[in-house]
Length: 554
Image (cartoon, rainbow, N blue to C red; front, side, top):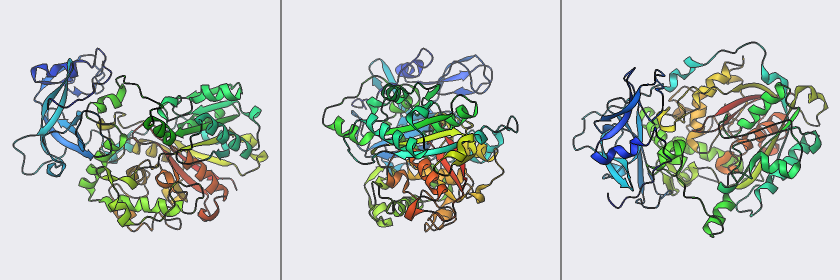
């Protein structure tokens, strides 16, 4: 293993011990003196009892393999290709999950529930833990339960603080988009301004009417995930907003809209321009041409811990959750395939969709692998484009050129653990919390939804939201999705009628909001869902998420 090169994340005085303790061959994890619980990633307080007495303690170095994914797409320099990333629950406290590279094993020989043993790879002055299968394995491997199983998340929903609902004081008054395509080679700020102008015009407003700006995640120019945020757009438009917002710690990629609804409801602004721009396709082209470069600084936060396990993409984490779901509920790749086929069939009716050619199940199953169990068509389409949405005060509803869209409810509560691999392992994390919170804020139920716009950065995101929102029971998506009839435009739950991010293009959920508005206006053309009056729109995956229930005013 001396030839392996694994990065070490950005370390603090609290977390550094984890990467120095391997010098003597022992794995150490924080333990609380007050409640005896183990804590990982390291923290200055115990999250179980909130006690202060946390300190490193040597553990056996053995654990249970609770997830793994073999990737051929994300080859980190210094690692083999393909690479196997895994998650191991330590035997002393299976609530503690360690992301680690899996060594000395082929993917075909791995099974969930296997006993794993730690080894260490030197990285400068640090020692990165990796895991290999133990010599002796149990005859009947058992997987530990999550700390908070998906079926019990709803027990932690907080009740409404009163009968006055902030959602009632705002409407979505306008939507718009820029050009959408691959490798447009256009400045991302130009795309943002094009989308903004289109949305403002759709709402019957002028630029001078806009008094609020909101985006996710802000910045992003150097990563291909934005145009520079509120700062860049305000520098170009000079609207002098009374309220503005931007950041990643929000209710998913379209959380900017929920924040805007709250701001308008509170009287901080009357017309908020929400926007999301990606130029990932052009950015990648410029990187390959050597015209851009990425920094080499250590990563912080969740992605830093994952990088030391060879993880370069959210796909490698979500792939492990999908494997766990397959193992527990008997789903297969075909289960996810019906989602990909549905989105492609719908995209054929959208003139701006990136992928419009027919897709068969054989095409889906035969596509090149990305990271198990995902293939090419399980993943959204990187593209260049911008979506803008105008949130306005409810008292303007009668003056709009297009029917306003009302906000029935917003689901935002963060219940599941925010660290990706410490959270719900059978589904996409951060789905069941916002979903349960949504239904606590309305008298409507899943059967009242006419069209669903569900986040589909990957097919498994969509499956998780379908179950999380209660359109079928937990573990029953295999039967619900079989054949694709239930999610077709004329099915029980018309799903992503514009093609979603899997075929229309990756717009980080804002394209879902735009399509929901068009559907509720009855303005979606050939892809219009008959009699669409209520739409659910989910946002995000792995990161904190949010969900909106919208209804027509026509």
